[in-house]
Length: 384
Ligand code: IPM
Ligand code: MG
Image (tube, rainbow, N blue to C red; front, side):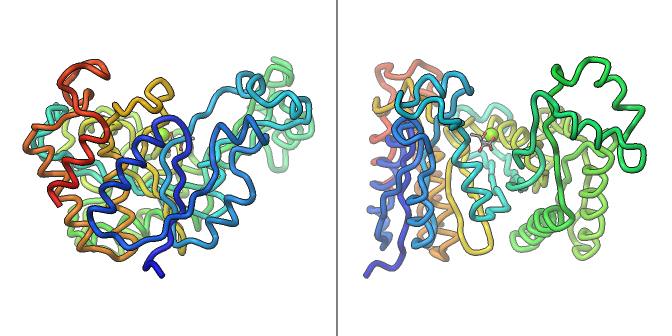
């Protein structure tokens, strides 16, 4: 029997290409695993009206963790148009399977390291950037509690003088509730504690000098206020680590200006989503942005990038983000030595600069001289 059981979910588009490339690397490492394929993505939305079939959730429950390529999602009307005709008008609506997986398995932490590897021509702001984003992954604006139009019942509750905001609600009544949409940002003390604690623990374990909370408590007074108080409280348990606070807008500017100043960043779901793409842009873009959705006893490893449908099956995209995501999986599984070997191999290929996918060369996909997805993976495997 293999040492590890891994759910294998290529998903959509280039998810297939980068997962194939990653498998080549994992095999070269001698990673001892059984891979169990699981259905997820657009194809299953179109055929079955469910991009995350129940059988997939059951499969995942029987594995140690999951490796996931990429997902396609489209706006509501387009999604409905592509649904099998026999499933239309059944009230089905598309939802993001990755957001649902985070909820179902309580994958509360989205860990997104953004490290510049020396020699990467895309490191426009320096070879010495090394940030880690801790993004809360199950709460905030991703809770799916939203309305359009705003039902009267909800509006009335929000305007109730005892618990609501009668004055502030006036203008929305004036505009007509049929013209008003509401998406909520719900955060719990537990959720805030868990992500802040995770960030400080990580900083302690890896000798990081600071943890920065990225928020907007001057405007989002209740939710932003809650996480700020929790952050300050938890910081007291880590006297050796500096605790900084920054507003999300200012942080976007500071990260472009002085990315080297920052270390571990912690944020609620939506701000973490924003800041992690920004941080990825500092270290070569989505072709290098690895990520892990981590819960107490399960994890789904998926790079930050999407499915890039136009490159599907063309073997052109950069697999480094997916390969580094697999490295995170190895770490999580306790295969520290393999993880380190893999990262060294990636760093060596980048430093050498002989094999580069199109994004690293600043040319169009498929241009002569650009390495294929497979060639990039083979170059990494050769270093092992
Ligand atoms: C990410 C992605 C997802 C998110 C999308 C695909 C739902 O942007 O993982 O950062 O918003 O969380
Ligand atoms: Mg995102």
